[in-house]
Amino acid sequence: MLIRVESEFLQGENMKRLSLIGGYLFIVAAISLSMVASALATEPWIWKMTLETGTASQTMDRPTALYIDAEKKRYYVVDSGRSRLLSFDESGTFLHAFNADGNLQTPYDMVRDAKEVIWIVEKGRNTLTSIDVANQSITRHVLKAGERTLVPSRIAILKDKFYVLDQAQGEVAVVNAALEVEKWFTCQDCRGGVVDFQVAKNGSLLALDQLGEDVVFFDSDGTLLRRIHVGQYVKFPSSLAVGPSGLVYVLDRHEGSISVFDTKGSFKYSFLSFGELRGQLYFPIEILFDPWGNLCVVEEGNGRVEIFSR
Image (cartoon, rainbow, N blue to C red; front, side, top):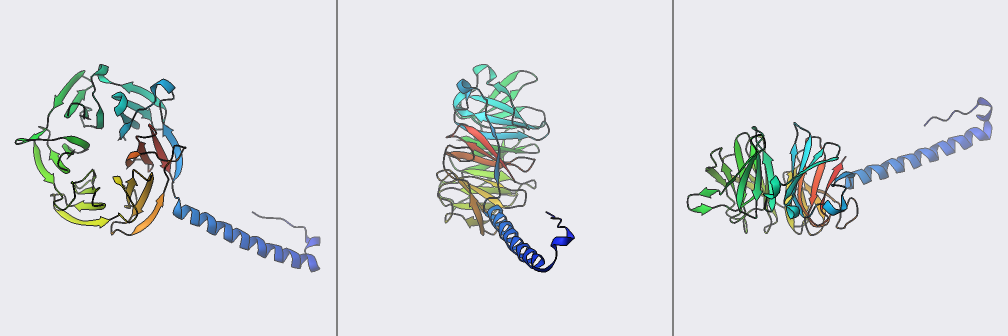
């Protein structure tokens, strides 16, 4: 901010006083900027919007997952408690509720393939269910690997491959278009296996060992490369995501907070807190980043999806 002072006041004692005031204002400004920088360093994410239906009688009931269609610029919320999918546009406006004519049974996660077929993990049936909207057909698939029946939980898709978390064993299966298991990502040292994962574009995988409180890194061939321990900062890790800058974000379901680490395991900061107010988290279940750099948090307890931005 520039302050214009007429020349007749810039003489004698007035000049000295202005000089002192200017110095004081400079110090105050420097302190203020320092405080702002400090605040940004510890709380870099701010609330942007909430995905919600806006109808009191049709609010979300225990949402469990969020799928983001970058091409169509749509958010899809898996509303498990009401056995339906909800769609929102990029601005967060509610568009449509879909329940396949009442044929969904406790959906838990979803993806969409290149043919625009929706694939849903139906926990109520223990199936991977495909919905061909164009042909108005629903097909349910029980995933098997030999005599072993998978219990699908989380799902991701990369090119023509499905990555399916088998909740029973805590392993991630790579499933081809014929729904045959081609390989596994297995953590032998993980206590109870992994509970969440994220697939990179090169097919490598990041997974979360909940009981061991570790983030586990796999190569694209399924080889376990290394792990980082996050238990000092996260009491009950339930989901993880890799941010745009490559940092690892770990969600604490019980504390309602998110802790951030670099890929070597160095702690950076934590933010958010447990609660029901806007910008607080109540039994959150999943985090992920959308294509526009926002951080999305699915809150099972609060029945909503909170979206944060820089």
